[in-house]
Image 1 (cartoon, rainbow, N blue to C red):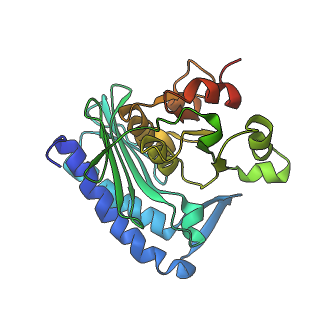
Image 2: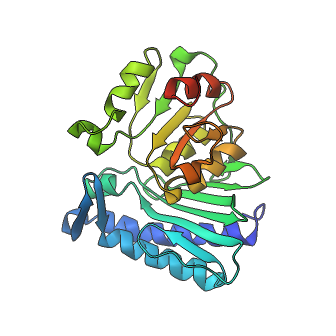
Image 3: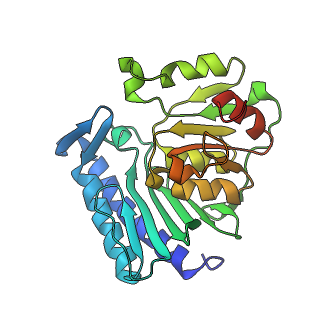
Length: 264
């Protein structure tokens, strides 16, 4: 991947190594020791092992960088301008139920901006890579967001929160209320892959609220570098700071964001 920086090459290598370990664990998913953190939110030994692999590789090569990841305490690096933002297993619930829609997500933040991102689905061997100013790529091919203009042909994605089904939220009723005409809505349970799919033109838009930086950091850069638009659900805010995200092609974004509720 000579078109990219040494950091991207490092991130790619780390993601591939962690992914190989997760594939082995996925083959024995029923044997994993699983502890419950909350409704729809699980952590497994596989998750923790993958994060240890990524931490060893990334901080081993860049010991002065900071660290922010799902399964460990944050670390302030000697270089305060750079930190790794990592989700070792985005789509843990899918993983634990034997569904092959999960990914390793790694982002590099520099001076509060995401400058590099990698999302890897080991089950399909799809490696999504983006670096600021260098475009977005799937394996060896450049990717762009969808060029569809007709709402009836657009395909959207979100994640249906567990608490919506318990009567504690409104996520479950949002699609039918706000999206009366479209090709469909998918809820596949991995924000990083949903964003990667927007970047690749597979989805026309994706939105989710109540998510963490590690869920979206790499994916939001993929969408931007693929020519898409990214915002928090409430327009004008940073997605990472707000904990919500809307991502779409330029053709879909204005209408999409209004439907979701980012605009009047």
